[in-house]
Image 1 (tube, one colour):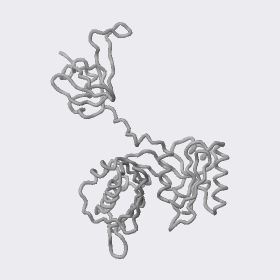
Image 2 (image 1 turned 45 degrees about the vertical axis):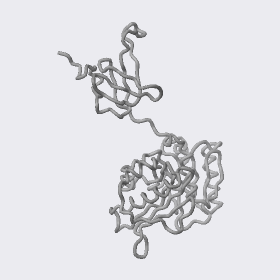
Image 3 (image 1 turned 90 degrees about the vertical axis):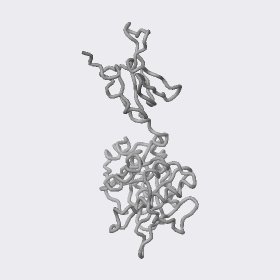
Image 4 (image 1 turned 180 degrees about the vertical axis):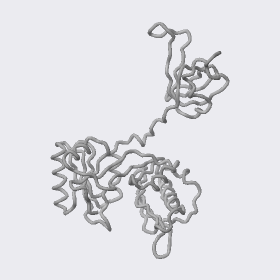
Amino acid sequence: MSSRPPGGMSPQAASLGPHVVGERVVVRRLLRGETGPTGGPAFIDLLGTCLSWGDGECVVAPESGEPVRIALADIVSGKPVPPRPSVRHRVPTREAEVRGLRMFPGTHTEPLGEWLLRSDPAPVGRLYKRANSCLAVGDPDVPVEEAAAHVVEWYAARDRDPLAQVEAGSAVEAGLLAAGWQPLEHGEAELRLGSVSRTRRGLGPTAGAAVVAPESGEDRVVVVVPGEGEPLAEGRAVLDGDWLGVHELKVRLEHRRRGLARNVVATLLEWGAERGALTAWLHVESDNHPARALYDSLGLGVHHTVRYLSPTGRFDG
């Protein structure tokens, strides 16, 4: 009795079938009439998107070239594979993080090799870590210990606590930890990004309660859900080329879980889309589980994770 699954494929190809249509797959198939390097049958692998499956064959479109028709009986093995990361997800960490400066236009900066010292000289309200930390990503052109000492001196000259923003798991993080720096409590955040159009579709219909506030400008916007005395919810966004950075999204505690955050995000994205935004991005703290669940539902994926380190493990912001 044959152990081959329906369609004549080998047991190793059992993870394939009509259910993979539309998915990215890798398929190993027999090349009939050809001999392999060891004298046995010849095989070839094909990576691409499965376009159809039926009538004894499947059709796979490679990333370049014409679609390939494969007889199911010639499939030796195969499986679905994760989709290729989008172009926006291949943007380097430093390039993505530097975009945050557009949210704090008055920030003073000074390079230290590839590192970037940042300080907001006239903050409104609390000190934001992104605008008042050294973006320690890349090569500072000096040993990490020497760079760390320079960071301490630079912030001391501005009467600020020294703070470094590093990519989680990076060599820079390891170097600063070895130099005695410590992570801040609640000092880890994800940079999330995704397609503006896909995120808008993920939001679905909204109640339309959020409105663009009067103080919005050409490249930045404030959106609020009006309430008695103060907004029930609000958020801001900055347009940087075709990237839309969303920040300061907040909902009054007693009005949460009513879809107000989705209304604000939808209005921010609509504003950005009208001005040519293609990519939406934001930071969310790793321990903010409700916000992360929202962004998961909208298709905003994790690009990278950052951590904030200081010599004392504290930051008075």
